[in-house]
Image 1 (tube, one colour):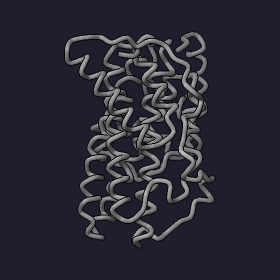
Image 2: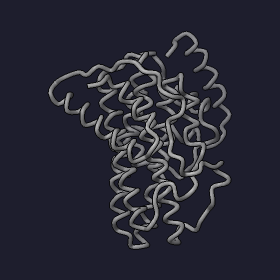
Image 3: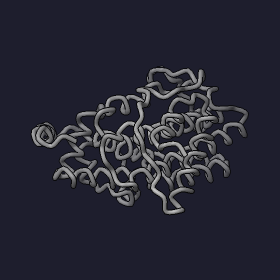
Length: 288
């Protein structure tokens, strides 16, 4: 069995979406087979690419240039499914990237269990949505997609706490906010198979946000940092713009995100700069 970090790099350097997710699921199965036998497989070290390999299609556009279609129309629903597939494929890479990129930070084996499980589930989600696209006569790559989805990963490439704060605790938490609305649109269209797929994704994404919160709090404890203050400062540093309500407070709470973490970031408040400044002074003496 290869070291886990090398497995992660293999996935990151595979371009085709279906090949990437098949490899991701195979490596996850190998990992959990070893773990079920009571083994602690080697993590190893790796040099992951700054950006993962991607297929030739879809064309990646500036978000302002991605065509907008009426969400209630058949074309709009296909575009929405395509956007979800693009998000899920990026999520596969994000979860393998956090494994490969931060091996210099000593973490418990449970950290790797959580992100391998997340990568496996995101791979399943990508395939579920691709199946729905095929059922509608389309496929992943048929529509242009958002070019900026990897930006947060690049900006937090040297900051594990920043990665945890921005990717699972902001970006994936946003998925908890918007997925119920998508489910409602497909219910209205009587597309029961897509509703079922989105319900699977919705349930499992709660766990991914929870893993981010769990390991963020773990690192805050290691460095004697106030988690709320640290979270606010890191989001201000790495996330561009305010968080957008309405928030799915019930599911966010289930994932370990209380309202006082995200509501103060929903708009500009006078004390945000002061909080960030105090955090930076403290972390200058507590490198992550």
